[in-house]
Image 1 (cartoon, rainbow, N blue to C red):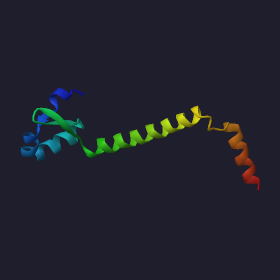
Image 2 (image 1 turned 135 degrees about the horizontal axis):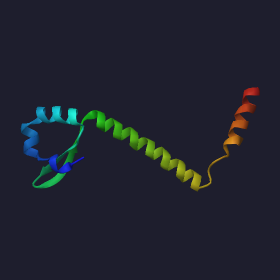
Image 3 (image 1 turned 30 degrees about the vertical axis):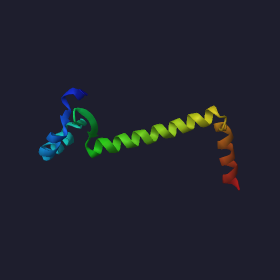
Image 4 (image 1 turned 90 degrees about the vertical axis):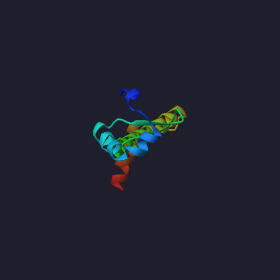
Length: 90
């Protein structure tokens, strides 16, 4: 991804909104919008956004799992499966 070609001033966003929507949907590249010469926001297509959010959610779950393992809050898989087998018999 080459962000240097995806930087536009806010005035461009205002005057070319329909074109930008089409381009972002097709290219799936984010657009960095500047205001007064400084980057102020990023615009992206909804599919990319949803995929990014799903990825972040999975990373959060992994991080929580790693934290619990580091804290000693886990059980051996054999122990869990044995408990499940005993529960099926009851």
